[in-house]
Amino acid sequence: MGDPKGFMKVPRQVAGYRPAKERIYDYGEVEQTLNENDRRLQASRCMDCGIPFCHWGCPVGSKIPEWQDALYRGNKEEAYYILHSTNSFPEITGRVCPAPCEKSCVLAIDEEPVTIRENECATVEQAFEAGIVKANPPKVRTGKKVAVIGSGPAGLSAADLLNRAGHTVTVFEKNDAIGGLLRYGIPDFKLNKRVIDRRLEIFVDEGMNFKTNVTVGVDISKEDLLQEFDAVLLAVGAEQPRDLPVEGRDLDGVHFAMDFLTQQNKLVAGKKITTKNRIHAKDKNVLVIGGGDTGSDCVGTSNRQQAKSVTQIEILPKPPEKREGNNPWPYWPNTLRTSSSHEEGCERRWSLSTKRFIGEEGKLKQVEIIQVEWSKDDNGRWVMNEVEGTSELIDAELVLLSMGFTQPVHNGLLDALGVEYDARGNVKVDEQKQTTVEGIFAAGDAEKGASLVVHAIEAGKVAARGVDAFLRNV
Image 1 (cartoon, one colour):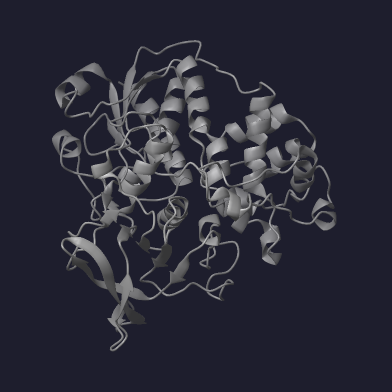
Image 2 (cartoon, one colour):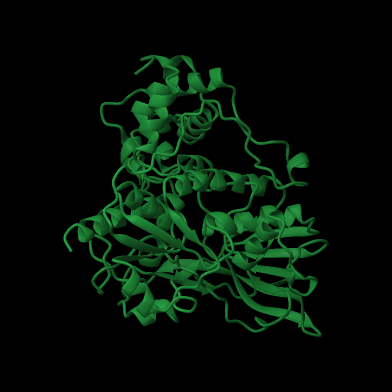
C-alpha cells in the first residue's frame, strides 16, 4: 500500500465527460482522462484491505490492490503485468465495464469508492504509450489446432490464452471485422474501435489466425471443421433478440436495437449503408423500449443522429436512488443508473407496458402504452397487472426494441453440431465449458445467457483451461 492514509487525504475524483453540447455532434469517446499525477493520487486511495472485496466483486479476479499500488508508485510495467495477468483486454473493460469491483470497494460503504475502472484504463494506456505492451508469441507449439467460432470478448479471451499455451488458434467471424459485440454492438462514443484493432495487431504478431466473412456451417461445413481442428469453441453469443409481438409490430419504423446500433457503427467505420435500409433517427420522435445498457446506447446514438425527441420506457418499476435494506454492500446495488447518454437528453419512464403500434400507410406514427403494477402471487412470484384507465398514446416514428436477448441462435451450426441446450435454450456445458459433444466447448453468452463483457471474458478463460486440458489428454 503506497499511502496508508491516502483514502483519508484524497477525495474521490472522476475524470467526467466531455461537454454534452459538444459530444452529441460526434462519435468520439465521451469520457475524459485525468493527468498522470491526479491518477496516481486516485490510486493512493486504495486501502489494501485485509479482505479485498473488490477482488471478490471482479468477475475476472483482478488483483486490484496490487496493481493500484504499482500505479501509485509509478511502476507502469508492474501495474500493467499484474492487471493483464487476469484479463486479456483491460483497455476494454476499463472503458465499458460497469465496475462491480467499485460497488464492492470498502470505501463504497460511504459512496466514495476508489476509481478502479478509470485507473484500470489509465494503467493500460500508460503501458501502451511507454512501449510496455508488446507481442509475446509462444516459444513452443503443441501441434494442436483449435477453432474459435465468434470473435466477441469470450472468443478472443479464450483464443488469447489457448495461443499462449502453444496451440494453433483460428478465430472465425461471420462479420467483416473481428470483435463481435465489441465491434458492432457498443457505440464508438463508448469504445473507440482503434482500441480493439491495437490489441488485434498484437494477437496477429503472436501467431493467432483470423478469418472474417466466414459463416461456419455454411462457408465451412461441420465435417470439414471437425476434421481440420482438434477442438472447437463456440463463442457465438446470444443473438436471438427478445421480440414484442403486439399489434403493428410489422410497421415500418419498428426495429431491433442491435440492428440500429450495428448499422451506425458500420457507418462510423466507413461502410456503406443503402438509403433504403438506413435506420435513422433524424427529426423523429424516438421511443426506446427497454431500460438496460443497450437501450442507453440507443439513446446516445439517437441524439447524435439529431432525433426530435427521445423517450425510454421500462416495464419494471423505477429503481431506488440509494441501496435498500435488502440490498446491502458489497453486493451489486440495484439502484438507478444514469448514463452519459441519458444526460445528453432523454425522458425516462418506468412501469409501462406496450400495448400496440399504430401507423398510417404502413409507417409507424404512435405507440399505445399503459401503466402496470407489480405484486407477488401466493407462490411468491412477481406478477404484472395493467392499471385500468392509464393507457396513453406516444408520438413515435422510430421504435427501438431493446429488451435483451433470449438465447443463441439454434438454427444452423448449433443444431448441426448436435449440442444439447439447457432449460433456457443456452448451450449446455459442464464445469470445463465442454458441451454434450466431446471436443466441442462453449463460452460466454452462448452458454451463460446475455451478460456483461467482463463475464464473457472470464467464461473464455474457463473454457480455455478446459480446452487445453482436453487437448493435452487426447
